[in-house]
Image 1 (cartoon, each protein chain N blue to C red):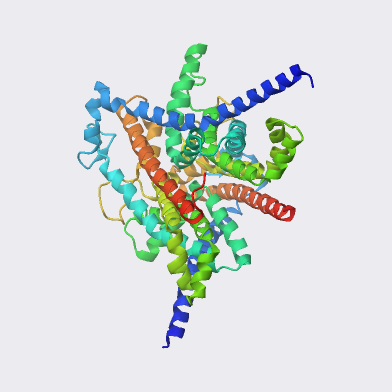
Image 2 (image 1 turned 120 degrees about the vertical axis):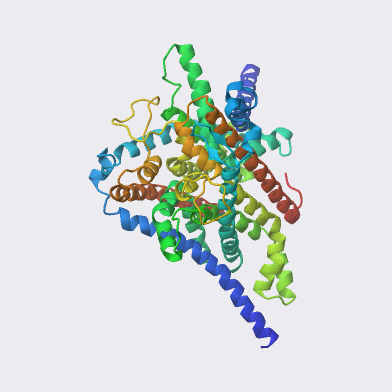
Length: 303
Length: 308
């Protein structure tokens, strides 16, 4: 074989292998989605979405798990959005690059992003429930109101877990706002805060929204941090206050597939629940992709 | 504008800036509190006499049995540390070649249109909750692989490792793709101009240039793999046994905490031991992440000169 054709063959082979790796990833995704769709679509009905589980979760629906998921994600958002956005605004608009405090905040954000989710669960138990909760109960003279697992503590634990994601997404959005816009506002006599409030943040809004959507998707599916901080196996009634325990979709799937007395009967229901969770997270992810590509195109046109 | 109004405006401006700066400290405070409280709840194994009758740090690294619920509880970390290492190693062996290969394909060879499809698909894979992957590996993948390979034990380290690999492919892919894409075009043009083929260019010029970033991605993936909970809790078979056999059921550090903390008596030796495990996990992932980020910074400095 000539040198030329040998090089051609090795080129084809090498590139082919990287293509194969890509195809494998896509195949894995399709197999997982396909399995869940095939097994789950028959279970899903209005009944399934609106009824509580019955007969030890071998029958009935998943409504309390959906309800609890929405409840906890809402509280999480209320906690994480203001803090995350403010931190990003500080890092990108106020902080001096290279200053020790800026470096420290950045380092903390990076490290927070790498903390294992189960460690957040330990922290939630040790800090929110044992320390804050018990402390509140003692000072209010209540018995076991805050000092126990509940939606509030689970949601705050999730908020902490997702804080880095909000910060990174917001900072990226701020970075996309052209410098001239700030200079223009400042030159017209606006203060720094007025510039941020009326010029920078409105333009960064799509990016912040992308981050929010991704955080909702992640918060809805996380299980490890909430296992000890608020999620329950089964509850006969819906939670009424943030101090109640809650059922949630991810944990419900875990319980159904690992603790069921009759696995044959629960697997179809678990697949239905999984399909609902997957539809939600994938829809949210796609929404994020769409917002992102739209703003990117708009930016490209604007420049 | 009167002087007074100007002063008020200045005052308000100061106030807002300080409030934002204070909020920004929340990230630092959070990481500090996490360390502090996991540390605080694990320290009784060092000083509490009652706890130390059952569990001591020396005891954690003696013997090979993890039997917390028995008449004479034993808390040797070795079986679960080995479990974490086995599962992580298998996950890395599977995920790294696939993720790096796919990243190379996306960054170097894929037509732009195909790339527009691949990236969102990987993001969708990244968005699949780990409990769903755990479910998939527990019920479907394990059965399929058992039939295929005739495994004696359905849920084992290989099953969990492969599923864990799927969870870390997206982050490794994304960081690698970033690293490879940020290699300046002039590198490629020089190689191609000297007569190298596209594959030779990718393999001998682009990959080495992006190597710090790829190492960072691999390390980050390793940190994720060690810290992942739900997949290994569901797919590994949950048997804390000291064995090097990868076709045996196993249990990782994360799965041990997740499986046992729910039933533990608050304040018992077992409770504090699980927090100590959490502290160990926190420390290991912290160091891995630190190295990973410094490597990524080095890549950027190498390719673009010092930034920040």
